[in-house]
Length: 365
Image (cartoon, rainbow, N blue to C red; front, side):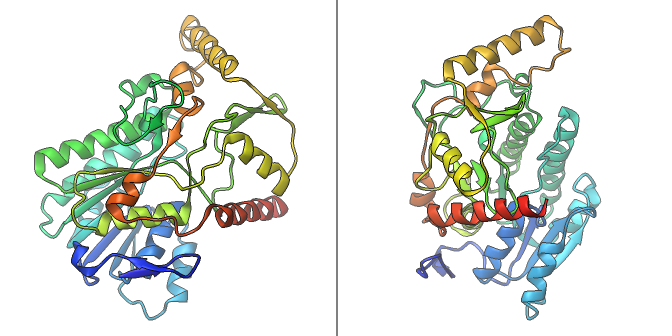
């Protein structure tokens, strides 16, 4: 099973290294989403067409429909609408499935209860439904870099062995809270029931369809963009590269129980990225905030929130600062060594595509 990268080079997984055959059923949850849609595309390119694409009734299925329209000879691709909060829908979705790619997530949820319901409860329902499915060979859980506490010294390398946030409820970030709890559920089911699981923690996934500037670079406020990243590396991963890593994690033999961080090669610093964005998309005012100052501001915000008994939510705090704005280095060595992954889209092409999409979005706004 092989695929061509941007340079035309063929690469892939040998049949003897696969845990399934092209005839086996694969479930992709969140298939209409930014990453999920690309996972579907990569699976098809690898020759796996027996796909069940699970989406919400309110999901945007336009991109999936375009895939179907462009490949009319694929008759085994199924689009299933449902709700993962429904145990009945989960049972129907996982029936006779060999590999599950779980990408449905509570991205954008602001409240902790909503994030918990749409990430943790849904994942538990999905895992519970697999207990009666003897065909299941792997459950691929897609988590996030946000789960890391990143409390080691500045400049240290963040890899898969780094500790997770021990008190995500204090981060002030519902998404982080949900992802930490979601990983705990996956670990619990893997240990107690022997479900073969692989977890992916992508950095900031960018590309056409996600044109925003990551908060790791900075935030907008008071009519100016506050540049907080400075000389920090930003853990970018282009959506095509991220999707291929996730696909390989569901197919390759010998990686059960592993966790993989997903970042690309040639990561730019925050300062370099911001300069490229201004040059290629639009100019705007920005103010650099040194790390010592941003840390102090987070500390003061946190203390005022405590003093006001939560009237001002602690959305900026020292835990957030460590996770997002502390100087950190990143690695994709484990991805390359264990999965044979290489970024199919090089950094210069990826950013050209991204900036072009940003310009188009601004033009059509």
